[in-house]
Length: 550
Image (tube, rainbow, N blue to C red; front, side, top):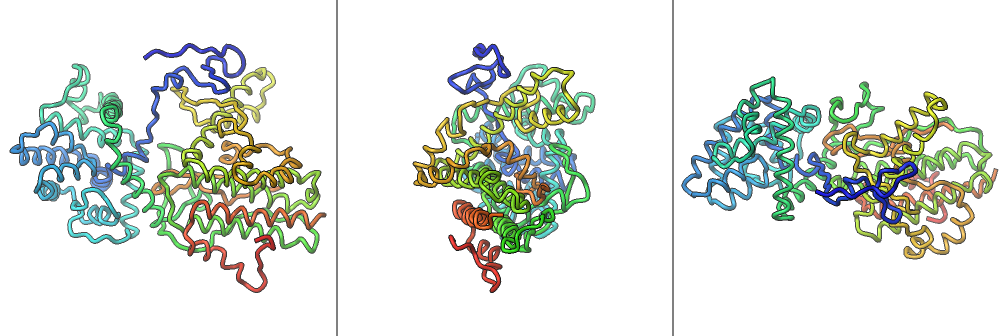
């Protein structure tokens, strides 16, 4: 692999490869780097072995190996040793392929798995609770019913197990290796073979072997994708179903609802899973400052709209596999609501001089939502990547400050910017795009024009253009927080916590715009109509009316 030579030699992005106004690290500039989220894409396909290990412990892998051997022996008559060995890697989709290729093999797979204790009643109930799961015969006679709390807890343990324990992750990823070793088709260098001979029993070499297994698993997956880019399409389709189904059976969990502090990454604490309910999810807020009597209702109304917006999203089925779409739309709407609520608690800001940023922000958010809805869904990920790249740039610029001038607060802020860039500590793969917008440099005006909102841009946005852009890194740090329900795939949710912080007709116009903005976001997300109606049912009460512009 040839690494492009950096052509940016000065400034905070020195050492990057520049093309136009886009800056990439040499590794990212090769075009060969393909980051993979195996937790989102692959773990649902490996759900069965993950459940077994969570229920029975790491020692259960020995029974899996025995199961692989027994199945291979019974299917040896077909003379397809290599194919059978590759399809016994623990993936549900590969087991489905195996059953489809060799008639009658599903019964063998099920009977041997039962004989070796790999299909307990709990595991069968979990597998049987998911619609469209590959190899559904593994669930036996289990009927498709929503999982109970015990099943949800087992799924949580399985997912947390691989997040918290790199060794457990390696054990699952080693199933293909053990299958091919037994079939006599495994090939590798002498050092790797020597390292894996005593794996996982040798605790002295276990850590090194874990690393080799995980790396080899990723390399093998990459090889399969080179040969056939559609090889894992069935697995991806199932992953979408898996995460979407989880959004319908359990609710989001926030840090404020737990006693333990949230810890990122592999140190994430376990939290009790609760079955999804339609209970109201009130927004926490700071006490408002005194406001004019005829505007006293505006802050409460806006908080109710924001709370209902979040409730509608979280009580409706969600497409958690494409989490970026929901994160960006809900994050932008939540950020708009938070800004408006803060301003409505300070009457001094209810004027164009000090409140212009609210009008500009509301118009900009509406343009973003309407324009992105017209694009390919990948635009939401591009929006986040653009913001993360800007966070990297700002972190690099902060490094220019002399050491003697850096206070403790400055250092904390600089470290936070580095975290928000989501750049790998070892491999620098974060692209920095310095074009004016996340849409390849397309101006806000051009977006407004394409979305049919040019008049709104000219008449409202231009007059209130002093407010900063809603880049993703700022939305994430201020308006979002991690969902602690691991069944939801580590997505982000709007935060209920608000920072503390007279022209009533102007403030009312902001509230009117925000109400319409929340309904626009729900419409673009195609949120379940019953969930929306339930969340906004309070508007039907005699003393509550939607804004006139609705």
